[in-house]
Each structure stands twice: as C-alpha cells, then as structure tokens.
Picture 1: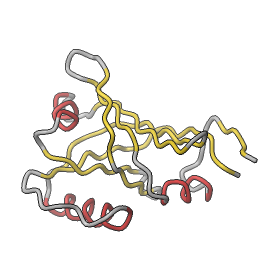
Picture 2: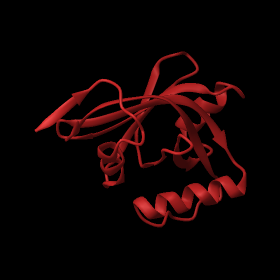
Picture 3: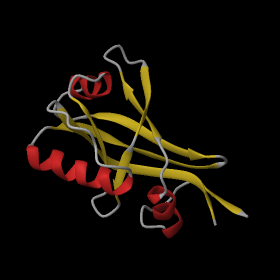
Picture 4: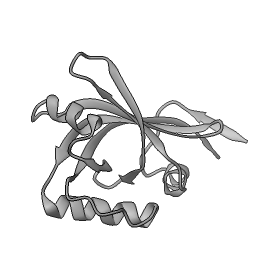
Length: 138
C-alpha cells in the first residue's frame, strides 16, 4: 500500500531509501529562450545540505543552460520514477568546477552508481533543494 504525499521531507526514511535505490532521474533546465530541456541523468542526494549533485561535461547542454542563468543560478527540477512511485526535487542550480567539488560529486556518484569514467571537462550541477514532492511506498 502506498501513501500519497504532496510535500516530502528529505529526511523521510521512505524518501532516502527510494533515493538510494539505483534509478535514473530526469533533469529539467531552462534553455536561454525559456523552453524546458529535459534529459536523463544520474544524480545523488545529500539531504543534510540539502543538495542534489549531477556530474556532467562543462560542454553539455544542461551545464550550458545553468551557466547561462548567471551567478544566481536557475530554477530546475529532477524527477525519479519507478512505476507509480516518484520523487520530484525542485531547486536552484549552479555549476561548480572547483576540483574538490568535482571529486566529492564523483565519490557520491561512485557510491550510488559506479566509478565514473575519466572526463577532464567534468563539472557539477549543484541543485540547492527548495521543494520535494512525490508518491512513495509506505
């Protein structure tokens, strides 16, 4: 049996368990013309920050969309789905290129998915979480 919840707490055990499972997410970023750009990504969640990290190449469309938003970042959404269970995380994204930030994001990625391939152009899309909603088992 599932419980429908409009708003979720990032520390909800059902949410953290669902997020630990190996699922892909979609990331929606605004293009410079304002239209949505939606792509599959593999993201990690740090509920204590609260922050979601996506590793990518600095030349990717998603990274360029975030950079185009300026230093203040851009609003984005990530959605993870498994059948009828889902979690959407909304927040403000910025691109981090400091080597320490990239290393941390790669370590988190390796813990959840696998060791990422080498990429000298790697950056991190960091999403400061502002809202979480979903429908989880429970």
